[in-house]
Image 1 (tube, rainbow, N blue to C red):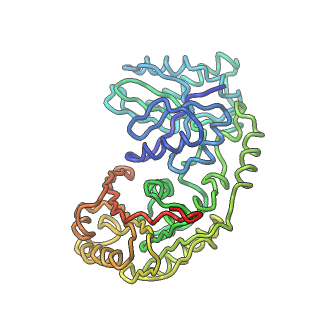
Image 2 (image 1 turned 120 degrees about the vertical axis):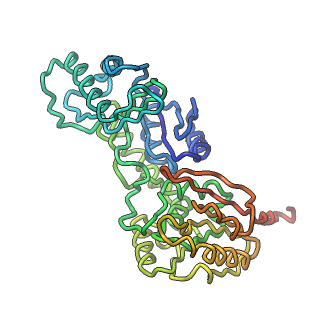
Image 3 (image 1 turned 90 degrees about the vertical axis):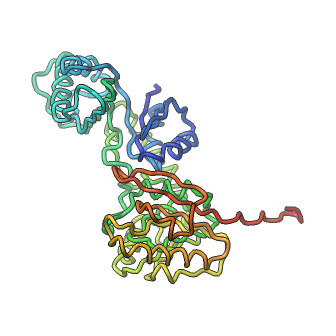
Length: 384
């Protein structure tokens, strides 16, 4: 059976997520700000949760309707065939409701009325006055835009950026999903050099190593839908088995992370160990200004301080100038910097070749891309 799925992502990363879903073999139905809709069977729900690096969740769309009053909303929620998805012992609740440009805007009221409507529907089917809710979790997420309601079941549970390896972080860490997306927005491949001179807790190098070793981001965590009756439980074990067999931690890599804070280097090493990629990354304590490499055609991908959280604004010109000078000392490298500081390009070397806006929650950031030359093609049999 095919289902309509919705994968939310950070604003600005829709094209990356869309490409990921295409690469998994699924048909894109629609792309909106922060959401990609596609069609997949029950195996697709499993594969999406295990393999998508840039999605925040995998949501199963179960209903759509128009609601301008709470009575409309109650009836629309009640009309959904909840018994098609939820057994009588399901633990179900409206975990989140968002409303934009709609007459219904109280999220707490939407959660309360939504749950009441679900109970009314389930009572009519299962003929129970009280539901034990001792079974698997079925969290419901509701999106309302201009009075049009989309109702979903959250197959992921915990957000997909929670890979499980990051037990400690710095003061302003970049999320795992954004880090993966930044890497995927560059031409970097596992046989190329990657360095992050502001690595903090190591997220960008670790995500790069996961990609290089072909480790699925959800391989070592659990999901809400693993206990659902509509998905054959064998699919989870079978897909995880195949994905484990595809892992190659013997791949040769040149991935580097450095930070001026020795505590962050300790944390980064521990996070990398939990992710199973410690041997693929070299972490060391160093000032970004001192980064050096004799190799050519590398990638510097980094998330430096930008004032709001880590440093005072007056310190930023010197810091970004140091980053620029370190980069200019490298041979034919590319520089990719995500920052919320709007004056960053003045000190990074001027207008970037590409600039992409990415929203980290409500925070607008800029992914500034300074593209170095492509390496020459490897000659085979005496030919280019």
